[in-house]
Image (cartoon, rainbow, N blue to C red; front, side, top):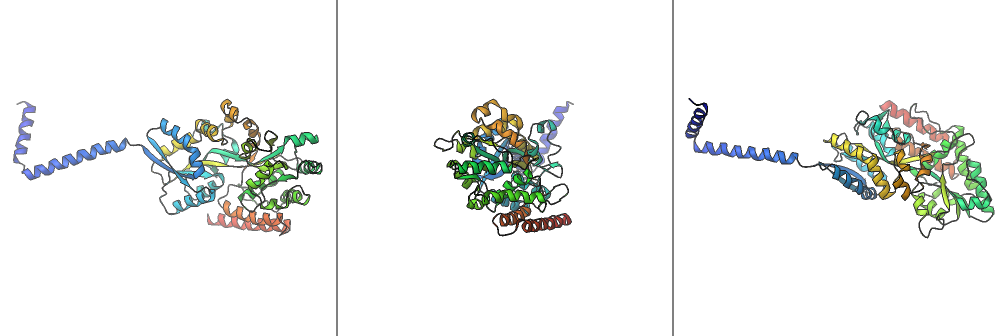
Length: 442
């Protein structure tokens, strides 16, 4: 007998013997399974949505990169959650989300100083073996190092920042002076121009008790040949002679009338506004002040330049590195897609987009000589020299507490509330106890 005919007859027999209600049930199950099947197919074709929290202004400036990434990767959508403007509040929100367990954020946008804490807590995916070395070769070394913890890569930097010494080219030329190299050069040039009546103040910097004070001091400390914490050995250098030399330079700027007495209350913008008024010769600040100083109507438009920070004889000038990078949350259900985002944002295309759109400083060396970028920002090649001499704040898991200790005692030393030697001995002792307790706990 024909096999197909036999199957057909058996099927008809089976159907004729099934109760009608059971047949309806089976039919319903079949329909339901079909719906689930096709729904699964449709769902699998929906884009993966990844979330990350950013300060509101940074989220707005990141839109250009998000749009290009999504155009090239239609299977992934990015949800930028706009947080508060203050970076410490963003850090608190990320910390809270991880402490509660299953963080809602797939990607973690990090200031460079958060990385040790987040990595030590196990909140980040280790990307060391997931990104080819060839992709990392063109990154600025110090910026890339700022994404590592105990030799492993947890953060890829997509934007950098660095402390700079701004100087008035016109005033120096008029006085027949070269840009200063050493601490004494800066003090001498300042007094010379002040005494000639060409500027009210010689030098403005960030002296208020906050993180900006620490960033500024790291540069002066490095230029004096000193160090804060050695991350490899956890040795503390705050009570060494080099630290006192750095503090002496800063105190001398006020004592000699080079810096205004109120400089110990200044943050970045107080210093910038005073420098931009045309009444100051030198300023320590971040790159954001450069385009502002050259705006139409600025008293110093076209009359200033930048260079590395001054230093002690025989030492090198250094700029403290800031900046932001991207890591992957250990709780994300989509680590592969998240890695695609990290590589695009921090890659040449993503960084070039944000540089052109927002003036943000890339962490990729070759972009500082990219013709399109240089046409828009002619000072970028000059920044490269400073960035390549960048110095990091110590990447230790207890960084926030170590920074608080240094801020308190350094402020006391600069304002005369404590003797510098006693202040730095106390700072060093407290820092050692902090690090020893952290080592014991781990």
